[in-house]
Length: 401
Image (cartoon, rainbow, N blue to C red; front, side):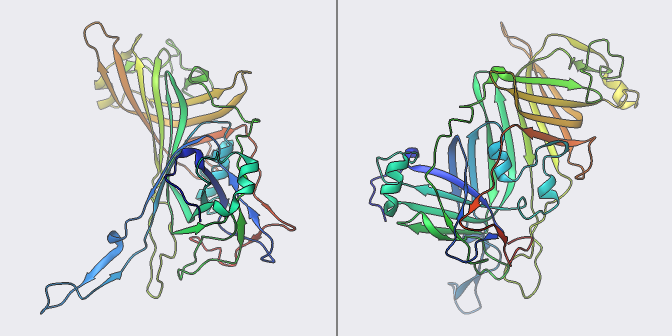
């Protein structure tokens, strides 16, 4: 165990691996994948929320406590957007014709949940210093989060700020290791609350990975509105997109934009089981896109057309592309079949008039290509490797383990 005065960001590195893997024989180790450009990390555990006091007549104080529900630690992770490698490692599906959540929707073993690892190195040393990392392995401390499911993903874009992503997780277990970065037992647990398998992990020395772009720039973000997913909306399109009135979507100067993907989970519990049998997604899943733009032109139409049902379909596809300096699209988000939920116009003395827009769409089935959130990333995600062998599915690979 290391002796430190404090822990700061230079000492940290974050890794991820699928949950349902184990190495056989146990002498072999799985090497989790490092997440890059991480700049925020926090986690908390609410023990009291799952605990119930036992009381009875004749005594003021409780006679004991009992844990009645799962303890679900929450983790918040933030990083600068790159080429999609982080998103692929976290379980998102890169395909312009399939939902971003395809693997998670299908409860696929390598997508539905993950293990997260956070290593803390010796004080005063950069975690990315490979030589010092190897020499001081006995001073490393590791926190492992087992059975992590994503509960929220948000991508943020703004003028003058680096595009970034913030991800929320809910875990089923936390393990603290001191004085080691290898031979770590899989932190995932099974339905009975026991360790899922005998797989062991080794955290290799982290690196900055110079093959990745340093970050993506805000001036490389391109936003396109289309009516049919192909042709951009124009002022005289005649396709019904301007009938509601208000913002002319073919002529906006966007200042900021966020894509919010909430993934609420429900617990399925049954008698005889200490833990939830499964934590499936709750539907419908509503994706929200919030946008702030400078008003340039107005669109023709009136609110009364909405009330009388003569405003047409009034649905649009919104594509957000992020390119590198060479013009290659590194990431693409495409919100299809979106509806405009609200628009708020405001102006002050000597200010530009602005409009705040909120669009929403719903996730469709895996093979649904006309509505939902579609995403692609140019980066390559290499699955964690296993020493002297191949990955094997965990014998406890249940929906929650």
